Image: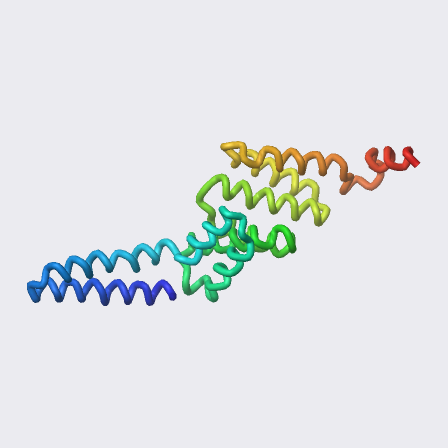
Length: 189
């Protein structure tokens, strides 16, 4: 249901409750007035995104994909802030299978403006992983530094350290200097 149809539904129910008040039917008028709050709530909180967040907490990626597919046209159905979280959830969904598709979604989410710092940290961490896989070590280091700044609670500390260790093992961008990690492996043979 688009956000405009939710506004029309709210207005219809609201004016119906006012009509019932004028007809001196106060009980049904109050009930309809309370029911008119529901479409207003769902204008600012999309029902499918709420269900998708519940699925991601349970780590149910199939359920997450199912609820994200219900959003056919994000520009019509969602507000700007909701679109940021829609792209953020898509980025999380594709982060295991297709890192480059995930990178596009995370970049869109950051451009639209994620609100909470832990979500921004997750998005920047995924962008750092994508940059590292493309071979852009400087951008990956910059994004990791930003992710570390945004991670106030320290939830991503272990993942950031793992990626830093991987960056030390990979020698990208400096062709003249040999990779010491590769030399150690060759000495074993």
